[in-house]
Image (cartoon, rainbow, N blue to C red; front, side, top):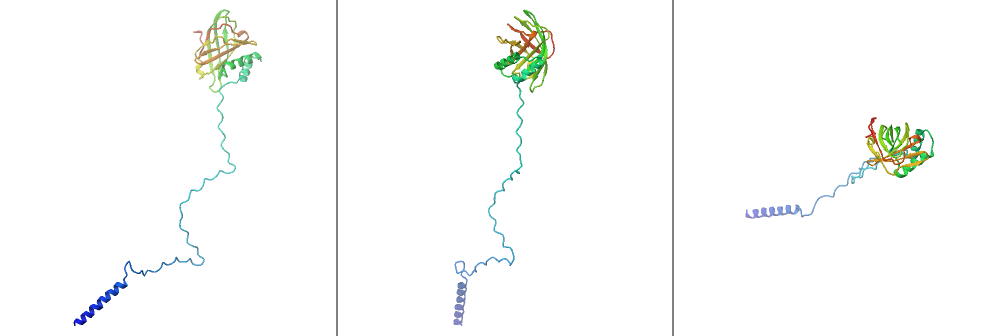
Length: 239
């Protein structure tokens, strides 16, 4: 009986050892099979798609068609100054005669003060041998600020001679706005100029320069130290 038990024990230990030998554990010999290759596509079938690659860049923008025309450049700003030939033409129409003297007076003014941005065409009355009063009315013209009706009055002192209904052209320089003409302009000493039956003087106020040009019986030159006051309505008060 004792010998049978010992035999059973030996068999049991032997079986356990055999089981341990069969189960090699993580460090034992692996019995895993090699991985299977991917299935081949069926005859006539499409191959599998390639694996996705890295993200690409967006497509370039489309070019304009060959007949594409760029937008035209913006128009140049409107000119705000009068050229000498424009003033000479306006003066010839206004005075009713073509005179070289008018062109010379305008060119002389342009040489001293540049190109005006406005001018006045009108008539004035008054006159005296030694002193008197001057009244006038006319229209102020500008390139891009509109036209304006104006009246002017003022005393004159010195050696003057003139007459009634004399036509007058006035060049206006540095005028910031049409309503800026409504103020008093004082005479500039030494600005008198006479050539070919036309003459000019100059007056100023707040950086605005006014150059009256007169001809014929309306000519007023000499020691003119008066002033002109411009108003929006007619008045007999020169002061």
